[in-house]
Image (spheres, one colour):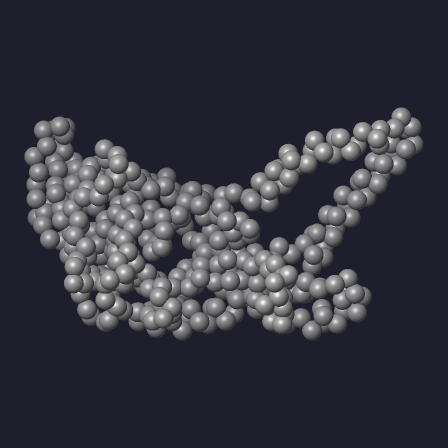
Length: 375
């Protein structure tokens, strides 16, 4: 359920489809029930209201309304069992920011576990005591209470989420300063950070500026200049992506070495703004997905064939400040066969998740650079 993210309710869509399919059949079957007696109509209305209220109470005030199921381990291989689990993504991310244009000096860094609930229920059922009683396996268990008593205290939860607030997208850094696997953040509204110590996953990502050349472009306005910059990604895990941000319209990306089928690169959408965010310039954000299964995974080993690409950036040169744009290299360590894909912080959070949560876990790194367009 909820495979479309936070911005779309799958329950409403499925209900609308079922209603559209079954409503003609209900009209056909309701023909013989047509009656002219006022007492009979009143009794039918009371029965309908009673049925609706009973259904609402059963769903909202009993374990049968819980959207997920938990089955004993003995039923795990039963083909008749149809489990409903909550999908959760956990990324232990190390971040390093270089906010001085043209400098490799790290101005700030941090580490956290990014928690992303992949359905529209969010973190509601990931908190402690979100479901104190188990889902009964039969009506008889409601009478005996044996199954309910045995289940109390068996379900975990993340106490860090009890008073947690969603993380606001950092629109001044490439793609919200988040290292995702795919560029789908605009489908989600609630992202949460759980502070953690830095992981030690290797190999580290490496980015090198190969060349920076001023390009003559007669089609640009007089206040603009154009630069051709060549970059080389020399190390990192197989999943190593590049994220870009330009301060459009003052600085804009006009071309690159990738075939996109459009005249100019198309920026990625970002998550919707929250009420607490200011109305500062978002800029234009770009996501370059890259995977190379042939690269090495040993610590300190550079790629045999670096990933080389070029960008053409146009910028206003009459500004008082030096024009620049932001580049970030995101490395995703997700091979379960390697120790770099996990960390003690991830294992601790994973062990405290409720049994109806199915996590996808990986380690990640986010290395941010601020590239100056002037020498």
